[in-house]
Image 1 (cartoon, rainbow, N blue to C red):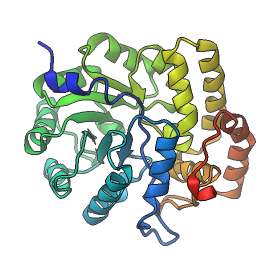
Image 2 (cartoon, helix red, strand yellow; image 1 turned 90 degrees about the vertical axis):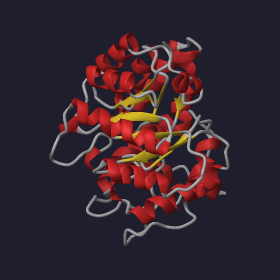
Image 3 (cartoon, rainbow, N blue to C red; image 1 turned 90 degrees about the horizontal axis):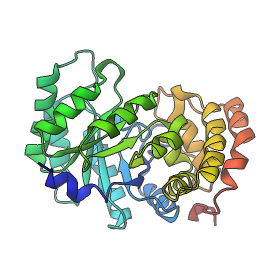
Length: 311
């Protein structure tokens, strides 16, 4: 039997859905009003949706108050132009529910929810109940965000969650193994949403049929990743492979332990203010900037979109 909740979203949450970076100042404070320029930049680049509170957005560092402020600010800046996804990287079922309820009646198209990420790993049934409770208490459709290394869900785990909880409509697979994307495309229901977070392998993920991507590169160079996705959808694999290798070179230049900081620097190169990561994450060094700059030109020449704040 088809899942009507998933069917409703299957053609909505597709394409490039970048996870917004968080604008922190030098002291680690969230800069109020700074998200709008980024939201406009993403939408002008052709993205199909926005995710707020993901890993690239340092969502795990946000207090409950900051979380609420950032979500409402981004939601208002979006003004209903594209689907809006709220990211939850929290330690408990109760905290996930409380954070969503604190947002009031703003329109949320989906939640991106990680398994709990502290030391202790619940079993499959407890994990199913985690997602079930969030769905039943919030009535907002859920994407599983499969990214926590010591609580990494197997393909069987994710299929079991989606089978048991109708509000869980899909997943973002962040393993570097594209076979997992292939297995999900093979075994999930046609209406389920399979998104990739595998930055180095966006092209093969799209070629296998992944419905879109939420990843660091989609935030760093949204217009280029849109071109990649669209080329694959059009069957233009020559163009897609050219974009893939340019992005591959850029990905290889990024230091992943301070990936959000690197993303903010790349955004800055396209006209957004240079914001900082939240401590203790390290800032981008001059050596990192040089390595990024050495490969960024061939990527940026694929898009003419620049942030309005550069004008």
